[in-house]
Amino acid sequence: MKQSRTSKLLTIAASSWDEQQAHPSYGLRKAVLSPVEILAQSVALIAPTAAPVMTVPLVFGLAGQGCWLAYLIATVTIVLVAVNINQFARNSASPGSLYSYIAAHLHPVVGMLAGWALLIAYTGTAAAVIGGLTNYVNVVLKDVADLHAPPLVLAALSMAVASWLAYRDVKISARMMLGLETVSVTLISIVVLATLIHHGVHLDFSQLTLRGVTPENLRLGLVLAIFSSVGFESATSLGSEAKNPLVSIPQAVKWSAILAGLFFVFCAYTEVLGFRGESQTLDRSLAPLQVLAGKAGLPFLVGTLIDVGAVLSFFSCILACTTAAARVLFLMGRHGALHTLLGETHESNHTPHRAVLLCSIGAFLPAAILTIRDVGSFEIYGLMGTLATFGFVTAYILVSAAAPIYLRAHDRLTLPAIGVSVLAVVAMGVALLGSLYPVPAAPYSSLPYIYLGLILSGFTWFFILNVRSPQLTAQIRADLGGL
Image (tube, rainbow, N blue to C red):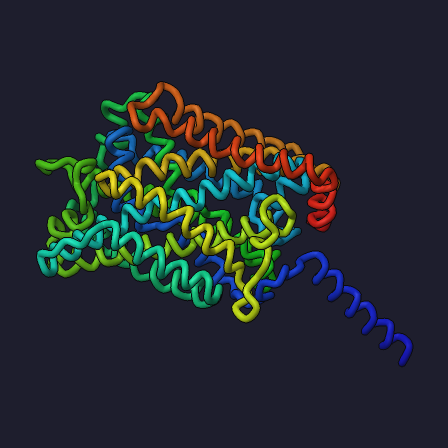
C-alpha cells in the first residue's frame, strides 16, 4: 500500500513537471489570470465599442445597405480562423500568440513572418484607436464644457498611461480592460435597443434586399468589417499567465469571435435603420450613437455617456494591444530573433517591461506623426487600421495553413478540419485582395508598400542574424518543441 501511494505521488509530481515544461512561464507571472480576465484581453483588443462608433459608418460608406451583410460575412470568416487557432490552443500555450504556433509547425522563418505581421497588426491597431480616442475625448469636452484639447497631448497621455499599466501588472491591466468594456458595451446596447423600439418592430427591406448594393460594394466593405473583429486571438499571448490555459484560452478565442461578430451585425443593421431620413448620412457622422440616442428620445446624458464609453473602450484597446504586442516581441527576443534584452522580464513586476516600452513607442509614433501633419482622427483610424489589417490577415492565413500540418503530425487530421482550413485561407485571401484591387485612392494606395517594406525589414534582420548564428532556427525549434 505504501509503495503504491509513493508511486502515485511520483506520477503526480512527474505530471506536474511535464505541465511546467510544456507551458513554461519564461519569467512572467504564472497562472494568475482567471478565464474572465483572459476573455477580457481578446474583447478589449477587438474594442467592441470602436465598430459602432467609428467602423460601421466607414463600412456603410462602402457597402451601403449591405453593411450588415459585410459584417455577417466577416463574422463567419473570423469564426473559421478561430476554429483553426483553437486546434493549437487546446493543446499548447505560450506568450508568443500565433507566432509560436506557426514557427513550431511550419518553419521558424515563416514564424518570423507571422511575428512581424502580428507586431505591425497590434501596434497599428493601437495607433488607429489613438485616433479614435482623441476624437471622442474632444466630442465629450465640447458637449460638457465647450473645450478642445490638443490631439497630440491626448495621444501622448493615453499611450503613457496604457504603457505604465502594461509595465506594472498584467492582472491590473486585465481587470481594467474587463470593467471598461463592460460599461461601454452596456451603454451601446441600450441605445441600439432604444433605436429599434423607436422605429417599431418591423423588417427593413431596403437592407434585407440589399437595395443598390453590388458585389464590389460588399468586397470593399468586408475589409473594414473584418478589422472590427481582429484581435480576438490575442488571448493566446497570455498562455504563460493564464490559469488552466488549455481551456480558458480556447474559450476566449471562440466566444470573443462569435459574440463580437453578432454584436457588430446587430449594431450595423440598427445604425443604418436609425439614420434613415437624416440630413447627415451615417458615414459622415462624427458621433453616430449620440445622434441615435437623441432620436430615440433618450436623455442627452446617455449620448454623452456613450461617447465617454467610447473613450474608455479605445483606451482599453490601446492597453490590450500593448499587452499582446509586448509578449510577441518578448518571445522573439528570447529566441534571439531580436535583441535578447527584449526577452527579459522585470524583476518584481514579472512583465516584459522593455518589450512593453518599445511597443508603446512603436504605436505612438505613427499616430503622433500623422497628428502633427494635421491628419484627422477618422483618417488616422482608417489609415492605421488598414495597415494593421494587412498584418492580421497575414497571420490568420498562415495559422490556418499550419493547422492541418499540426493535426496531421498528431494523427488528428480530418476532412472537416481540412475544409475549415481551406475556407479560412480563401476567405482571408479574398479580403486581402479586396484591399489591394482595385487600387484605392491615395494615401491608402501606398499602405501595401509600407507594409511590405516593414515585413521585408524584419525578414532582412532575421536573415542577417541567421547568417551570423546558423543554429538560430534550430534553437527556436527546440524551444517550441513542446507546442
